[in-house]
Image 1 (cartoon, one colour):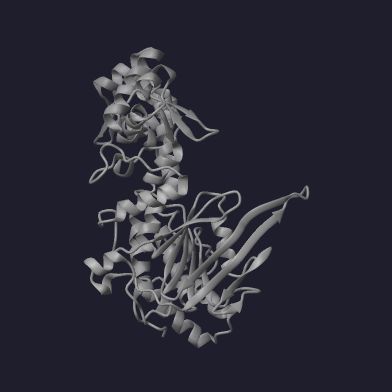
Image 2 (spheres, helix red, strand yellow):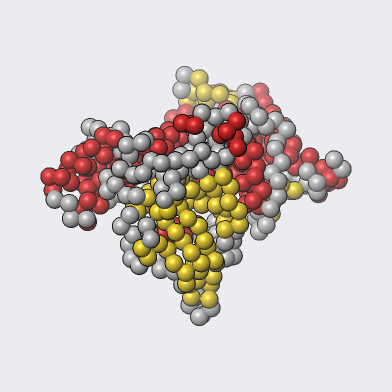
Length: 461
């Protein structure tokens, strides 16, 4: 077992928080990175700097998050700690010894699960033990215990294709923890999961890492999500880009478990955002208990032109038709049709009852309108029924110059859906908002803009 000597850290702890709820961190250094530089050589011979002058220490019992934009070198730094990459200069030490190959004190947890599809759950979990030469009987016993620990008892003989995404990542947890590493290295392990599964697994992983009997109580986490970093970490290292450098270190002296309703949580989120972007994040007018950028109804991935075709087809068939008939008429698989149906329902254009799709009066008016009138009607429908689009429009109207960073919206969306989900949500919102002429989008700079005729009103706030 590890040394559990701890000390109280932070003013908040002294004032009001029970000591046993404070992140407990020993002073023993497990990982030390000193003066690390990394560059790669392009095919033309040019030197491409990725990391520059990285210095940090990971102490025993501590969870540290590496937070930064894409291209800041977070994953590259993680691989240096794992011993999978060698620095161009500088050093990585594990418990005082230089890391000159795969680091024996670490285990890696990946975003993509990285399971062998031809192996069972138990066989996947045993892989690391097998590589370390653990004999078969002990290997099986330890694998079964790890599988039970992550809640997959009964699935030992299942194959990855039989498991949900959350269950597959639990296998990843078991495979990493079964070797009892000193340090768990995590590369965006929750970003491929839906919001509820990700939240459940975060809580369960945190419980495993902070349990006093756990052999693994130290972790280094790579994440794009500011809220995930604040929820899990004792410290956050914010990396800049071109090349990656540590810009700011933030201490997270909040009680666990913690979420955005925990006192001080939002302030740390804003501090991290400012450190990451150089600008203070302006909260939406409705921020607090209800933030439309976080709690909005998920947008179906539906193309406006295809939605228009669906409504026209419904109108031509008398305004009511069975879903299977519409699917055949439009040559759509039913699964491909459903996002359009969901969009029609969300916007109030149609509803599904007893297997039939019925056109509403609003939907009939849209289907029969000319192009310019359709845009006007669509704008009214999305502003009334899609909080995400309405909030983007409100923020644009309230901003100086009628501009809103795409990154700001995706950062807040990540609180309620994984990264790929937040990109899809914003992509749909951008497409619908542009069609309705509520805002424009500059893909090169990643900026949402009010239409030119509205910018005067937006900039006079």
